[in-house]
Image (cartoon, rainbow, N blue to C red; front, side, top):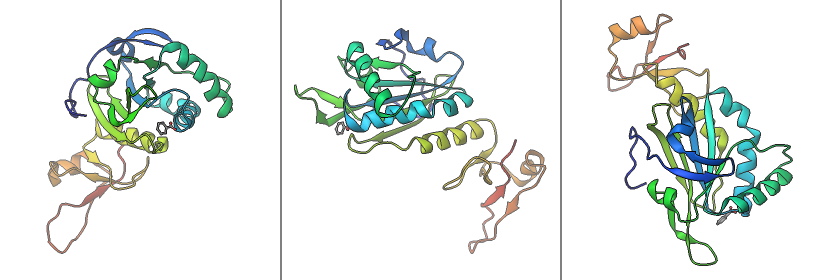
Length: 221
Ligand code: BEZ
């Protein structure tokens, strides 16, 4: 991900997808978006991943997230592959677009290329990238997985819950946090401010250093 940093406005692009041509920023509109890439069509791990995301699409929708996948092959190939994805994953519908990127233009723009993965013709392929993008079009999260490791989309939802919570509340979420779990008061908030922000209270945890930096509170509403 050479040029894209957290907080950057993500690059806009025009592309063909299985739902027609899109201008990416217009397509995102006022929602959040998850853009996730795949090495190639008709590959086994990708087939499980796209099916899993479709089966979880209601959960993404509840969080105001639009989904869009990318694979380097063309739209006709994507459309044929979608039938396999539906059949293998027992799905009656497939509700989100897949971007076609045969020239690797979007993949290059976003730093998704995996130098070690090549197709039969020796063309480089994308890794399994995940970009979570806010309605402000800014990058909230980026993760790269190698082609041989399928993603855990429960983790992507968990992370989105944390991103959306911490975008508006002055808390951070601890290791393995899940929706409804207790949160940490962020270090920049002084105790006097924390008392106002968290009327149900917060707990300062004693540690050997004597420094009062570990403060927990219920997840704010
Ligand atoms: C897969 O989706 O199964 C896959 C794609 C490229 C390399 C390895 C696995």
